[in-house]
Image 1: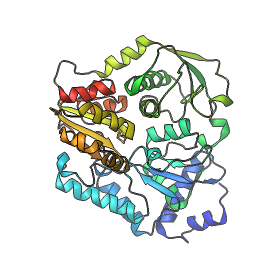
Image 2: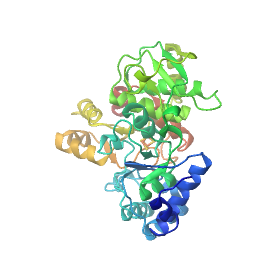
Image 3: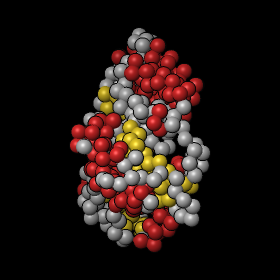
Amino acid sequence: MQLTREEQDMLDGMYGRATQKAMQILATLGTIYGAERMLPVTSVQVAGVSYDNLGEAGLQFLTEMAEGDGRARVLATLNPAGMDMENWRALGIPADFAENQERVIEAFARMGVVTSCTCTPYLTGNVPHYGEHIAWAESSAVCYANSVLGARSNREGGPSALAAALTGCTPAYGLHLDENRRPDLSVYVSAGVQGTQEFGALGMVIGRKMEGYESKPIPYILGIERASLEELKSLCASLATYGGAALFHMAGITPEAAQFSPPEEVLYVTRAELEEAVHSLNLSAAEPVDFVSLGCPHLSIHEIARIAALLEGKQVTKEFWITTARPVKQMADRAGYTQIIEASGAKFAADTCCVVAPIRGRFKVMATDSAKACYYASSKNKFKTVFKPFDEVVLEALR
Ligand code: F3S
């Protein structure tokens, strides 16, 4: 790999131990993937934040990087933590977990990473523009940044994203290069798809169809007339979860789609397939729901407004988590939505979510509108799932 003088100096340790380690990670990745050089990045999203996933070994790595003078050189934001950093007691998080989670956040803060704790950085100020090279971890956000914003990121892991933050660069390979952003197959959606739940089911159907291919194809989706920000974030989360996708194009909707003609190879998605996907995530229609969660990916202010409208003057009967970024929660405070929602007994869980919080085995059946949350709730947390449209999930909390 051809390195600039500054990059070589980082590799030689002239910028401190942590920066050297970061450049070693990136140079190794670049060599493995045949990159010829590094690219400067303007934005980083770091994942691997919940102590539940990191454990002591992960925390030690972060502490060493912070003590080795690691310092972010570009805007770097953080994925959700394992708890609401202010209100963790109300969510039943154990004190020893909270202490360790705080140490994780402190290590990131020492490195100058904005401790935003959200998987929707694009809703809270980390919004790369079209064509910008970035290094994001968090699969749903990577898919959103590439597809909906037209920025360019590979699916980074926690260490490689942190390395990009500390050096300000990433190896030039994969989705950073024009030739790797071309669509490989057309996907005609003949079902009229509506709402976050159905867009999540669509991502699941397309993702599963992609599983049969040796190298991940980039889908060119046709037949969708309109899609809201919330529907697209739901689609991105499930397509990334079920198909490993980091980029799709959608005719008439995503910014790069007009550059390409629909590929000759064609797949179809029917209403029957969508219904089957929905059905497959309803693992426990017969058992009572004891946990309700909305906000995977983290909720927008529009979604919180809708929840407030549905809960106004009513009382929830189950544990109901509303997961979002803290700045979005602060907007909800100022709009009066928080007061309405909390008066109903529902709980805000800012900074975290039902997947990365340490709640394995605590509930039996979770209701949600998120296909991604269903996947992890059953595989990681051992919950059964009820997968419903957004409004019906809120009504489930009242039942
Ligand atoms: Fe975000 Fe947690 Fe879902 S990190 S995408 S809310 S699993």
